[in-house]
Image (tube, rainbow, N blue to C red; front, side, top):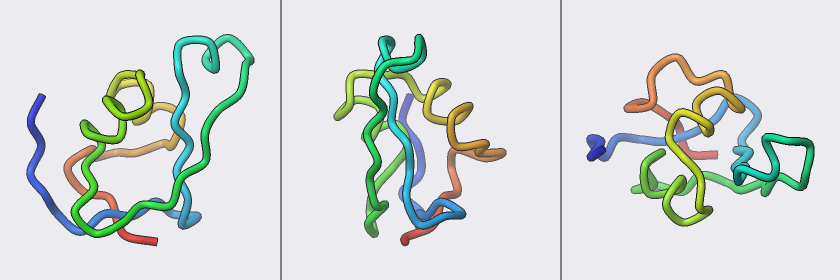
Length: 68
């Protein structure tokens, strides 16, 4: 899934990236979104899915996140 590169950010200025294990109660990674980041690339970098990142961060639109 290729997403448009837009200004990125999450409400709390950090994102939570979870692997399949994290979805089952294991550790989740906290990251700070930087300019140029995309949800799809963050998901790939952390071995998870766009859907998982979207759900864990309550993102309405995965094409629009903000730096922070």
